[in-house]
Length: 442
Image 1: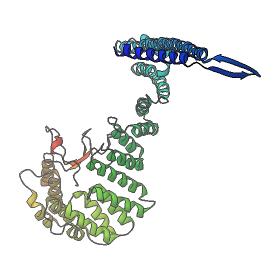
Image 2: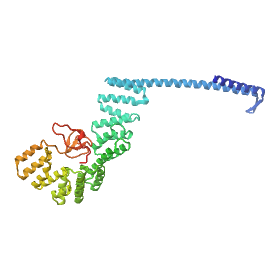
Image 3: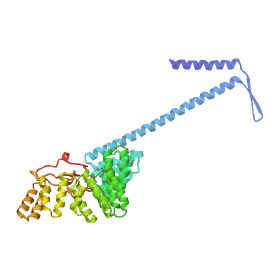
Image 4: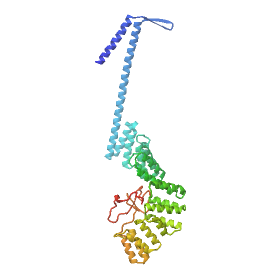
């Protein structure tokens, strides 16, 4: 109704103009090449109207033809894309059915149909090579995928995994870092990079990726601080013999994140001794013992006593001060045995001889029996009893369950920061992770 009304108004308007032209006709004069032409205004304006009308019809016809051509091209492109997507789908189904020959054929079809979306065909091709374990061809496909913005992250992950399998950690880190920079939220990418870093000793990179991961809230504050402390500790180990001052500075930063952690403390003491800072080492060990006593420091006491010209027993008494913990009693007993003070050693350890003393206590008693009276029967008795005693605490990998005497950032089993300071399970007893002292400063 509205359209009909609009057309009616337009026709009335045109008729009114025509009537005005006839009623108020005048002569229109113009010159062309010194010739003067005159024509009635009625004929002039009617001619213009006819020209306008013809132009309008031609333009309308032109746009209709153009629209039909565009629609035809669009439908054709849609049809080609549908064929391309069908080929991709058929290829994935073929992979699932282990028909790899058909999958490769569908991959080529996908390329022909979707030339502007070659990433799909490359993805399909990569899946075929992956299940066929054709790793050389797979690497070449990944290289092509890395040049496509849509598939570059898949390519980086694929190349990283390829190099990890071949234990080429240098190149694995390069592609892992690219993936991390593009999308740090990819599952397990941070953990993978950290393990690669630990295998390559690229500790400055651990600081960088941990900083970024923490800023993106991929890791919590505790993980961030522990991993940074490990990086500074490992850098200190590298600098230990070339720049002891810088090594100590790095260790101080490590200890600020992981206070009184025994592996850091031991290295700190070693560097102090190498620099002949005996008084500093002595005072620092006493301070540490007051916070976290551990028999692991006995070797440090021996080293300080040798360099400080003081007996192990006197230094031990200074370090433990008035502490009455089991660790202090064991340490003092060791010092007394070292100076052959058997009765005092026996008296000191006597309070630890409960119903089932630990293996360490049993072995100390065996030493006392042999050293005091040279009683071989009692010595063997305590040695035998030690076999049923609880093991001393040691570093145990929570993944491989492998034990080791010294803490390392990468366990002997190849796992980053996986060591716990705990007692190994006795025979017939399972290792309960919940009972362990993970990240304990012992």
